[in-house]
Length: 303
Image (tube, rainbow, N blue to C red):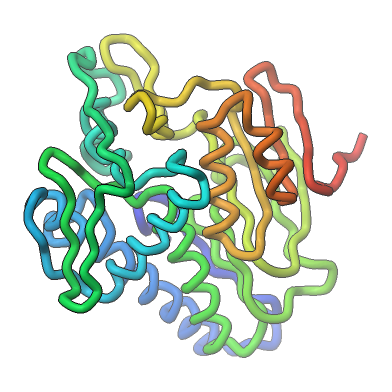
């Protein structure tokens, strides 16, 4: 199925035992959660809470509990990465040409004539009592680094309750699992692109709990004035991060933690191995020259 501008899948650990109707209900439960988060957090839906906050920059806006929760997750990610993963990069993405759903994006447009200053995550004001959010004038939020992963985590939990067995939810390659996994764990093929063929270059790993995420500059990229752009923006410059690692995969206790770490690591570039090493998270890094590095006990690749 197609959600949040990408492909998604819901898998169950016991397909032979589960009745088709129950499997469909589990998928519907996952889809309902995903739709709720996308409706609140999409930058490309004018009626979303996020779009209304962006359009009213400088004024407080009453928002729903789903958006407040998702924004709290995004701000927590900014805290934990010391601002490397920052939800106030939306204006920079717009200026670079990422101003609509990626499937509709013009792959080569006019040159980027100006950059947008990133106001920084500390500038976001939340009043939980009034359920309001205020961002500074000329600021634009984007929750792309966390909302999809949050949807995967919540969707897997919801589908697991309905299915009564283990569930895996994948949204654009961001994975979350819940419940009892299949024997030996869920087999996951790690590649530069989640839609790659099974025989594409990569590695197959197995996970039994938590989440796994892959951040890459090889899929969501485009040109402006003939210059390559990608969606992982360095908040310090407002530009796409310098490409040192073309793809980084991380496993963690949940999909949000995995995606925050993989996104931050790509943006950090040369500093990624030291930072990831301090987190202790299993990680696989593919350099632009194709060489592979692993950290944190990531399983070795077969010869």
